Structure formats: structure tokens, C-alpha cells
Length: 209
Image (cartoon, rainbow, N blue to C red):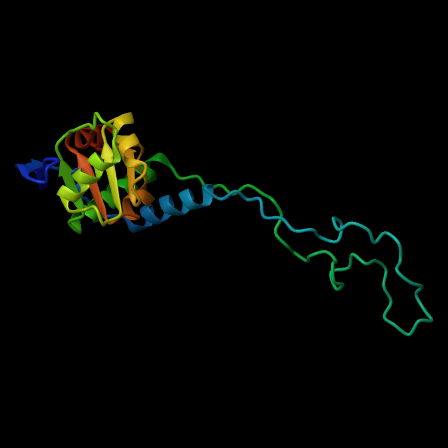
């Protein structure tokens, strides 16, 4: 699969750059994508939602009034779910949320997501660079030159770069990610995927098997 390579000034510096077809041009597996995204969303849940049932509500150990003779309904405790301030019936209790997905499915899901975005023309390849100044304005200028400064973008770099991260973290809708750590959800949750040239090689090493 062919792609153009752009410089940080927005000009085309190379044509017919080869994107590995076993990552960017496979038949997408929708079910693998579904499982990977569902697992990520599930595992992100805290599971701390909690309500008090009748056993946890304070007070109410004593019968509020005698069984007979008052002309009102009988009552054994003020903690009854029928009473205001009583316990909650079948309310949520803290418990862990987790979902496991096999490594092969995770890898297939990410390759499927890459193929989807490539088919939509949402992949942009840029020449390798770093931002020595670490300044936000320099990173924003690069995005503007590429014509994506108003879009929600995911930037894939080959390895951690503190300067690029520093320059990017104050820009809304821009996420920097090491290529090997990108998730299926992140690939689908952005309008455009910007990949540094050497990050393509890194993707091939990790996902191309």
C-alpha cells in the first residue's frame, strides 16, 4: 500500500512510501474490534458505585411501634426499603469489572483498525522529527502546516520523546502515543492518524507477524 510522506513544513518529501499491507490493507475483523474496545472500556471502570441495603442503613434495630392497636400498617424496622431513608433493593455494590482478550485478538483488532483508517484516507505519514524547544507553538505550527490543527489527531512516534510530549500536552484534541502501545479504541476515536516514518517500521516489528 502506497502513501505520501510529508515534512513538518507540510510539503511532500517522498512519494510511494510503502505501508505494510499486513497491517494497513487486511480484511478488517469487526468482531475483534468490538471485543478489544469492549475490554478496554470495561477494564477502565472503577466499579466503586455503592448503595446501602437494609442491612447497611444505620438504626432501625428496634420495632418502631407495637404490632397491633394503632390502626396503621405493621412495621418491624425503619430500614425497610418501603420507607423513606430505608435500604435500597438490588442497588449497585462495589465489585471489579474486568474482561480478558487474547493477544492474537488484540493484535488483529489493531490491524483491522489501521486498515479501516487507511481505507478512509485518514493516515498521514510524516518525516521523523523532534521539537528541541519543547514549545507548544512549534508543535501547533507543524499541525497547521499539515492541515490538521482543527482535527482530533493521534500522533504515533517510534519511541518515547519527552520534547514532543512536552510540546503537545497543552494542545486540545492531540494525543501522542508510542506506536507499540496504541490501542484499538484510540485508532478509532480520532479523525486523523499521523505516523512518523520510523514508527511505521516499529509497527511492522510489533504487529506485522
